[in-house]
Image 1 (tube, rainbow, N blue to C red):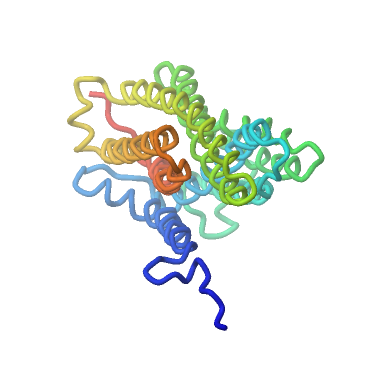
Image 2: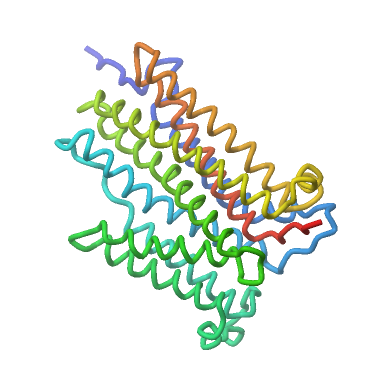
Length: 332
């Protein structure tokens, strides 16, 4: 008697892993092409000039942001998972690997600073000692060391201690984005600190939740939907904080009377507009997942928009990295 066809081989149905494979391809493509070619596309026709090697810098910052999201999100969503289903095995940790990836990206960015904010072409272009004498160099070294310590903490008996060096990375990024010469620099750093923290928790937390749902889909499906529901409630607060800090930061960069004009005539504005539209898509997908959790008979239907949400969030991370590499808009 011939064996019954496997679930993945049912005629007319895509294999179960096809969606995940497509999502992975989209994320890898976005993480590569958006940072590399996004700055030039945004600058086209604006008359602005970006620093040399802006595409490579944006790519390194994309990797750094992604590593930060994975680690902070794993700590946040792992806490939720242990509260929802303490008896269930949690997904395998990715934090040690993410920390080493972040370390490599931070090291690459530090080398750019050591070369005078230019892409180095050899060891002779680097002034390592000069890093200690400048604010940008000190912050770059802080990020390198923080990721190194986070990698060591992640392999220790108390992996949660990695949150301390990761917090140092967030603080360093917030300070780097707002030099002292800027008006009310500390206010800007505070806004960036909250914005970056909430964004990392949102994106990285959803990634970890989806990994837990996949692991529990047969052993504890109800626990999986409960975890997604609890995450969704916290994510709503995170989205509100991201929106509020994003609006305030935008008004600091672009006075209210010039926002609409600069959103289309400057590279920073164009990239910011693309980010806003992507976040709107993410919010719509999150809302769809929440409605399915509440109203659908089969609450696992919420997984579909949640998976799409994490893919779009990956693109948002890449666009955010491009935003940090572009010249700031002129305050008219």
